[in-house]
Length: 374
Image (cartoon, rainbow, N blue to C red; front, side, top):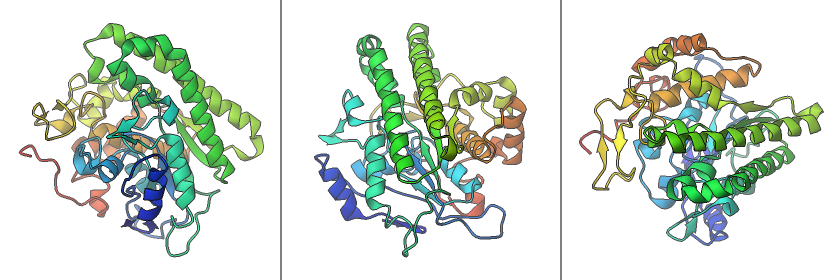
């Protein structure tokens, strides 16, 4: 599969997944690199590389398992956060994230899809390294010290098993949290050992605030406690790693999505984003659009969440802008006015899948999908 400047080997992908006991197609990897300033060249040897789950997936689940999600294989009704971030940083996007991924296969309660393992965070990293000699295309090498790597994982370690077996998660919460933190530490070490020095580690996005638990305050409180504990552990992982590698880890940072979510849901920020519904999802039923209970609302762009779990398009848009701002200025402490300013600057209140900062520059100039009539 060839997308823009970067190449993935289908043969290598099949070889990788065969080692997991299955056959899959290649990961989608990136969009063409566009310079938002309108001049100069893109840093094609300094990509923005993302490993993660459905929060970051740009079509891997569709490509690998043929499992349709929503817009263009995304788990949202428009581009997801990392597509905006890569664009604003003027870097090509290499994305190995896949919906359903957890931190490692040992962390999964049920980590298979039709008998095939969903590549975990650690699998994704290993697979990328096996193929990174070809990743830049045309004989170009990736500049590891100047590239940016993001690790975004955890929702499927904690929330997904809770959805099917809350008793298991409650009884095993300390083990699950510790396993997640250890896997993130392993992933961070793998990336660092490969020469990468600019690394963004997400805390676990607050899925417990999604509509799935809006009418279940007891379990929402339980999940919040588990997520809070996990995020303390993840922060400790990053802090300890930076302390241990002081001379070469000044650009390894924790991205606090929980704090940003709390800013996003402030009334004045929601108004600036033109998000009017924070309690109900746009999509009801299974995200496989051929299911009989699948229904889609008329005003999906005005929802905070697109389905009971996943953020909608404008939520992703502002998260992507904030991630780019944070990477440029990691000491910045965001306040509500920063989000309001970003919403106005990028016209997020009007943004759709077909009209946003990406499509205006031709990066994502595609027809609406799915349409309400689909």
